[in-house]
Length: 181
Image 1 (cartoon, one colour):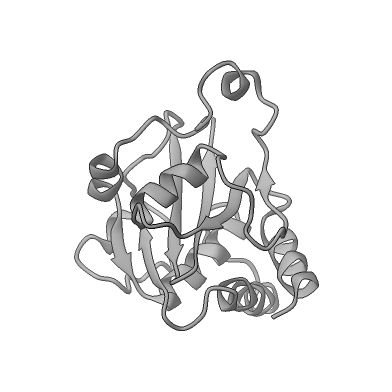
Image 2 (spheres, helix red, strand yellow; image 1 turned 120 degrees about the horizontal axis):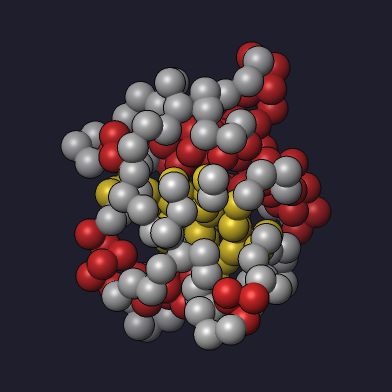
């Protein structure tokens, strides 16, 4: 895994959609606290790699709500909105983000997006766990998302948002997509 390959994949997937993609270090506080720290933009990427943050300079965020567009959540509130999912589901969620909540585009576009999603997730290694807010994952860690995202537990005040947290032994990645209509 190289910085250039990872950054190119993240940008191809998420640069044209309203999304947030950031990684922070794992600490002794636990991955939930680490994920909340990433939501609040507290840590820098531990490798110095790219972060995608459309709201970095937004007034709502700079005026006292560092987690914007996310709502303030406790660890318990965060965990009540997330479900464990497989790496395959996380891959599919990245593809859905690319295609504005799915379903995905042409077969060729989908193959390219799946390849880029694999590159993004390779950064975190094989010992990672994944958690998403998609309702279909409540009872199934590998839900059928071929029809797109149809339900979620919101982490924002927007009309919709979905994403996932990837937790590796060293890092916590946060990938989120927003529908702010």
